[in-house]
Length: 125
Image 1 (cartoon, rainbow, N blue to C red):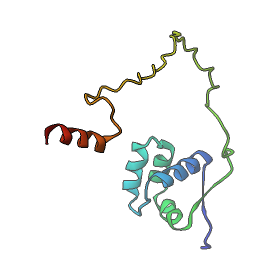
Image 2 (cartoon, one colour):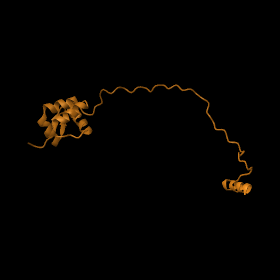
Image 3 (cartoon, helix red, strand yellow):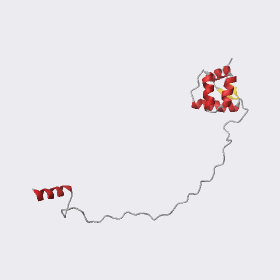
Image 4 (cartoon, rainbow, N blue to C red):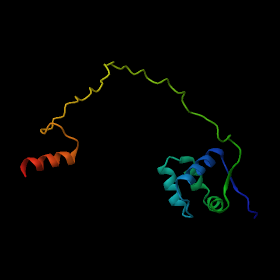
């Protein structure tokens, strides 16, 4: 027997490729069937169940489509809808008011933190 890839129907091949990307194939075909059914790949699950020996060979050597269906075609994809119109309420833009230049310091003329400390020390000591 030469090392040729196992030929499978086009839909089964697509599902096997998708399944291979999602899970790690194992030699335990019953585990792979369960994972395929859980993910909705019913064609692949049925093919593996009916072709256990071919699956085990294909597991090692690979699979290829027998050409029944073209691969990579877009189908069952709905047309893109126009985005919904969002209605907004216009509000006046809020601007920040500038702070007043008047300082609320009790000492009168303040040139910073150190000047304030010196001023406080000068009053009490």
